[in-house]
Length: 251
Length: 261
Ligand SMILES: Nc1ncnc2c1ncn2[C@@H]1O[C@H](COP(=O)(O)OP(=O)(O)OP(=O)(O)O)[C@@H](O)[C@H]1O
Ligand SMILES: [Mg+2]
Image (cartoon, rainbow over all chains, first blue to last red; front, side):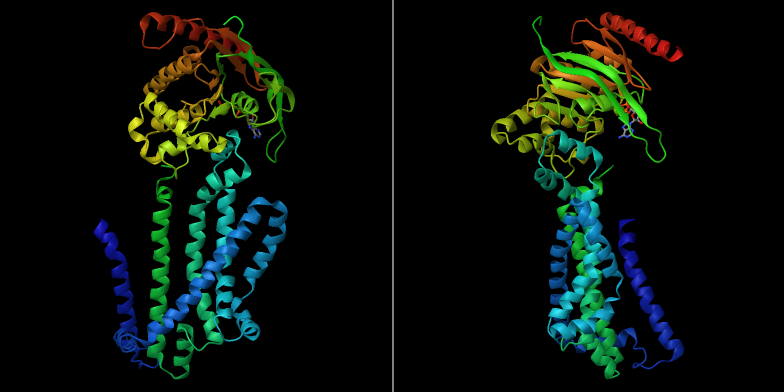
């Protein structure tokens, strides 16, 4: 059973590669339309010092933006969870902000902040802050009623209740938001790089498109996907480490 | 205990819950008056929905009654007090803390001496037979063991009053009887004033100095029955169990007679 569970994702991956290869073969497309998995693998090998260099730039932007989004998001969530007034005023604003197509903001950010890392980091924050705020606020507000009464009956101060009960009880929710957020964060960094950049995987993709080097574009996308998956599972590992009890709750 | 004073005075307490969207207003409690004396063990029985939990939450200061007042040692209750402990129907343990850390939660919150009370916490765990589980996590324990931990947590800060809301309701009959005996032992050893809610008449008679019987809709106090049997009591001992069963049967009749009337 356990072995099968581990094998399944690998099988699915191999299946997807097979379909990809079949499609290319059936239509007889050339590499500049659709490279084969083998050609992409070769490009990855050829560019083994070039791609990591750019991946590193994208990774830094992603992480900076993600950390900033956590700081901002958690602060907003605490405000929302503790004040009805703030909830009523901030919340619709956040929803509206989230509804704006972020891609449309990218050129404006470049205009304001130039071609450095700044606009990319801001784009990352814009994309991933919403799920973080939402999940953290939900977590802080959904303390189990019995724990709520317990902490009240113990004459705890609001600060004690926050530190000893509300925050730990919110952690499983927070991680849901973080796991949604990290994938969006990578996307945010790439969007930022599409519009105006001289480094990063997003820049490589745009540049290789202009040179009709589709194989390199695909290689960059593959690295990007690997990056995103790695970050996601890093969070899953962190979650297991920090809140081992979440898997056992409500047995 | 002739000079024993009144520890908890419940004086004409009524509770009305406002109408909700799909619910007419509920008169949960109607003019309840009851005195609980120092070191007395009083049980509250009545069928589901008669307002037992509501009354207990009012005594704990978790809920403000719409009429009447509660005094503890002559002081009106306006909120939770440091010398009153609540044991809930569910253990309500914090899953991110070990057993011993759960027991010590009140010590942290009340800012008591960790060393002194740490020793006390270990003594209590030993008393309920959980000395080997101090470092375990709550989810590694059975429901009965968790409820024992909750009991230790309620006792650790040495409260003078214990309010217990069907603490053993979720347990099987054998574990229940185990814990009943433990609770009686704790009560005789540490001398506490206990107000204990249950819907089991047998449990009420087994534990109490006095049984307060409630009737539903609106919640009223129907009768208070004294139980002057020697302790510790257990349903297993035939000589005393006969007497216990007789009292239980009387109360059964009382509760059903009210329904018929
Ligand atoms: N927060 C509340 N809002 C509205 N109605 C409530 C609330 N709490 C309790 N009630 C109502 O008050 C009545 C008494 O409830 P309570 O929980 O005190 O009963 P109980 O005797 O403890 O019952 P049980 O044995 O099932 O626990 C019920 O009719 C219930 O619907
Ligand atoms: Mg109840």
